[in-house]
Amino acid sequence: KERDPNQNEFHQAVEEVSKTLLPLFEKEDKYLSVFERMLEPERALQFRVPWMDEAGKKHINRGFRVQFNSAIGPYKGGLRFHPTVNLSIVKFLGFEQILKNSLTTLPMGGGKGGSDFDPKGKSNIEIMNFCRAFMSELYRHIGPNCDVPAGDIGVGGREIGYLYGMYKKITAQNEGVLTGKGRNWGGSLIRPEATGYGLVYYLDNMLQANNKTLKGKKVLVSGSGNVAQYCVEKLLDLGAIPLTMSDSTGYIFVEGGITRKLLQDIMTLKNVKRGRLSSLSKVSEIKYHDGKRPWGEECDIALPCATQNEINKEDALALVKNGCFAVAEGANMPSDPDAQDIYMKNQILYGPAKAANAGGVAVSGLEMSQNSLRMNWTREEVDEKLQNIMKNIFNATQQAASLYGKNDIDYLAGANIAGFIKVADSMINQGIL
Ligand code: NDP
Image 1 (tube, rainbow, N blue to C red):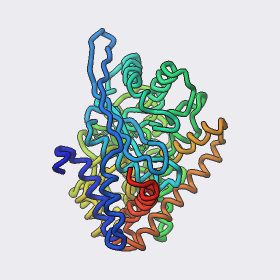
Image 2 (image 1 turned 90 degrees about the horizontal axis):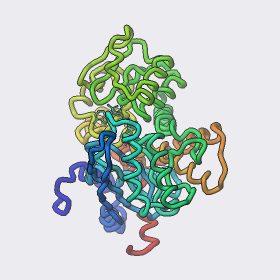
Image 3 (image 1 turned 180 degrees about the vertical axis):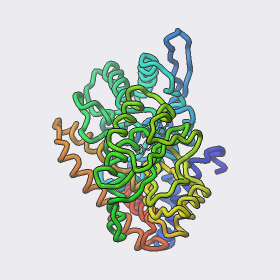
Image 4 (image 1 turned 45 degrees about the horizontal axis):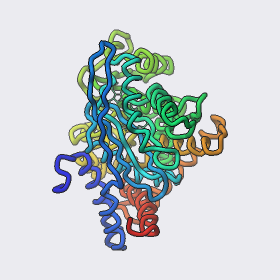
């Protein structure tokens, strides 16, 4: 904290992990010094991104790429475009990514990047101008065997397209340097769906292991972006009842559950029209709650899929009071430490982000494999691999929870420890670097 004051989100992520690793350090003290080394990124880049809007006005944003750990493979992790992006946010995300990528069992190190650029209200041309300016610096630091960025908040298929186009123009190389690419130019089937689907697969495994099922369960979902949309789709596939979705200005509640037709309308609203959920407030079956988050509604399960620290102590207490028995995280670090304590004290089944939302990066790993093989797998092949990966991740977190956790359902400790050991052992094997 003294070395990096003001990096609150990074400290929060490290504190959560270090608390859960203590039993491991007590058993095997070699891991403590490796952990200290792991807290320092191998490389942290910050750069200027000058770009021009359609009116000819010049803007300067900050670009970041933190190449955190390459012990088990090339740096891998998304790019976030959002006004809140700073070094602390990128470091917290990059640090979590190391352990998450390890859990997928695929050879990927951890990294993250982005910019404080705000895509809201920007025209298509402005988004393209910005992506080009961003890549005109980033390209020299990345590569298919070195660092492979992907999307995150504010970076979806459109942005990956503009970024990839610019990379190709500068380097004259057609190679798997980004994931989340379009289907016709190197993308993998199921990548857009992967984080949301994977979250529900993880949840399903967690429920089954505790003699519960998803069918007929009332679910609160936050967010209405990439992760939330496909989470709701998979919930519907498996017979659950998604009641809510949200964006940064409020949430919608649908008595009886969000239907496929409504989900389709929300996808069009968010992905094509780039509008707000508030515009649905006049639809008769929808109740829109301005400026609020959905955690005060009655439910069985909560799936936060928007952003960090979106569930605090009061929210967690409300969830418990209203009958929630399981929380699984689609977003990164959506539950603050007080909320995590409430889950633990109330025996809530808790699927932490590193494990529960690892499906996205797992399919990114599969996209990298397909690019290297110059082959495309079918939708069914990729979905089956995703399901197996999520099952394996759940089993690994469950085993580590039994060995090192406070109890058998301490999947938080399980995820951190299972992810950590593989990276730490690899770092030890490779010497002090
Ligand atoms: P999107 O940009 O597609 O969607 C983000 C959603 O969250 C939008 O509904 C957005 O609302 C809402 N949101 C963003 N910031 C805030 C905020 N400060 N307060 C309230 N709501 C907010 O991003 P993704 O769906 O890709 O990402 C969502 C989360 O999932 C992030 O935490 C991300 O790190 C994580 N994640 C994403 C993966 C992926 O594959 N995409 C992989 C693993 C994790 P609005 O429309 O108003 O901006």
